[in-house]
Image: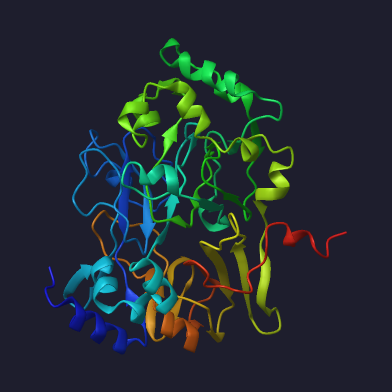
Length: 411
């Protein structure tokens, strides 16, 4: 492991004008079944052992640790690879500060406070929420708003249940949900009877505030989010498998874990029973720049504010074969290539067809805030479109759209 991170990171940034190569970061979940679309070799989905569960997530530009029982100390953390050296992205940010994440984020957070992932499951996830800032602070953690985008390149099959239950039906009473928690050990506690499922549409997404119940379906999902792994699961069984009650209570204060009324009061009731839930949370891509004539399109795929704050955004860049384009952005970002091959500031980009666990790839990079502001040059050197997803930190994109803006201009 590298010792002089500051010198190594500075040299690596100089070599490619603010772009760092990242190695794949794999995360298992013991309570879920992998969807097998992460491009891992078929023999490697249980590379960490069946006791740890199958690998169903790949995290991008992450300085956030995965909150898994029995995890490795660096689980969830991204590594920078520079020649023969390897060091944590988190350490590079700590050493270089604003040179990496920009002055606004460094001054306010003193870290890279967001991350993104692919999560990929055969079936649905239990109906759950993520605590808000105030709630998470009670257990020494941070709250977690998040967002979804369903990339076409990784959704050739929808798997078992490409629908997501979100929120609660208007008119639901808190007593109804308390009754579900009271019946936790009686089998299926029936909480999905109080919710509504939305069919997931490839190439679209959702913005999910904290304290809102959701049971993500089985599309592979790109998920920009706040840098936290807190959650509470309110569904006692999923696909016939029991959900341990500890997954409901783990991120609530110990003295409150047996208080079902407290656990239900923790939900953002107004947002959960919102009769206009889809209008207030659904996202469709919006072109930011480019055209067919120019040979590229840059699209907003995640946007909007939560309680007045822009906490994260994301874009999808598509470049046609033979085209080179320089893209400027308002902040640092993590990039993952999902189709094609090319270069970013001279560094190779290559979309792998299959990855062995522990193998290095050339599909993921981190771009610093100064480099993003100056402009990063992407070039498609292949015969198919070069497509990449990139996500940004808080207040990085002042001109980002608002939720619902995709409807403007539609008839």
